[in-house]
Length: 116
Length: 114
Image (cartoon, rainbow over all chains, first blue to last red; front, top):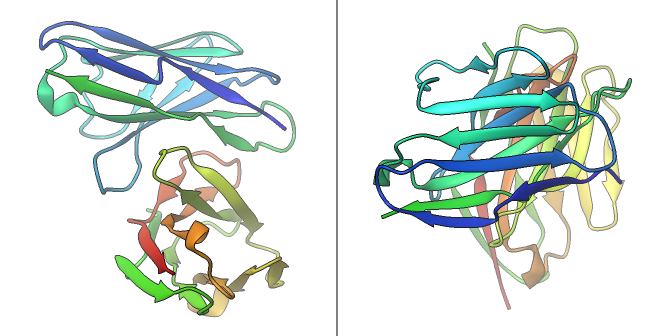
């Protein structure tokens, strides 16, 4: 089956630093990838839609200058949390939508970010 | 706007009991997809089912079954003879025809006690 990986799985960083999270589709091409954020005991909230070769589309209330998204290839999207603060600590999950006819969306295992 | 409501925040049952998780959705689209995912403590989402809006047939997979009723905009999930390993958070989700813009319900935390 289709596999999506995320790296790193866990990261701890100091307040004010930037953190990059990678999302890769391992065995299919994805022109569209999605980034979600999940706070403890809450649901997944869509942050942004990442399109290969173009700018990402951000959901209302998500700061695009803080959460930089780059989708430079058909198998890789990156999310950079700039100047991270403790309130950015969360579980970040990406998904990749198969560019084929099925439009199936496959989720990565998530990245747990802790900002100290 | 698309919306998914899972009114049950937490459910606790004893092993071997049957349990139904409710999901009600709102959408103006005529073509859409409904999903159920399981999220164990590890955090990784486990895909359970995808249903398109034109397929109202109920589905059974082992101890799992799903009841899709467009008339009531519901897509309920039943676990028969629950087991401790079923303990997790279960999310119902809705997306448009091209599987964009997936919206999740708040989730239902299921605890199955031995």
